[in-house]
Length: 94
Length: 198
Image: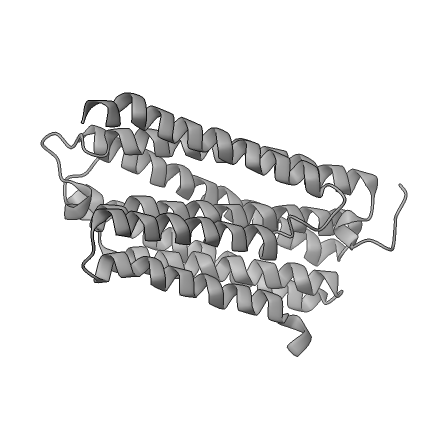
């Protein structure tokens, strides 16, 4: 039975539950918008990293570099799209 | 077909390796799909017109249940792949089935949530905010729905054919898809729900 529950994945799961609890603090505790957003950004991206590295085995095979390149490219374009649009359509008019 | 037995079953042929790489590239495109949805969401978030705002319609309980269900299912599909790698077909199928049940439960809660939105007057046509909210959540939900059927078919194939380089490859790719949906949900959970209720 034990060999079916590798420590790495069990720890990864516990860690991701912990990150969820930390993220929930922005709902249950009083805090400024800036602090809340900082907590959410950090927990969400760390959570994504846990999934990619521990559960999706992104860094395992010989295609590691191609996989990370694709992910960073997608992530970079995503961030530019989100932040660029906010800059052009919201923040510029505050 | 050349089988390299030094590799995990899902990586054991050249075709398998390329399938997995190809799927990662597809996931890169999926990141962009969700990025455009998030972009529209953030831009239209405050355009609520005469409709309700996020803070008025979001409920923490169903959202929390959905998050726990999806996080746990992401863990169990990870365990399924681990069981597959140590050749424990039965255990793998068990974890696979738990994953699909958790996925179905997630969808059930999400459907409840959509009915709730409809009842409080937040429909696709109410405002720019509710429109993009339901589009974003719906796109994610549709992915989970697709994954559910895909997973069921892979489950049946493994039951019929056992673990072969082909079925192991399909299972691994399915696990990538499922983890990806969990990652997207975490972003929805953080930047749509929690941000909206903060």
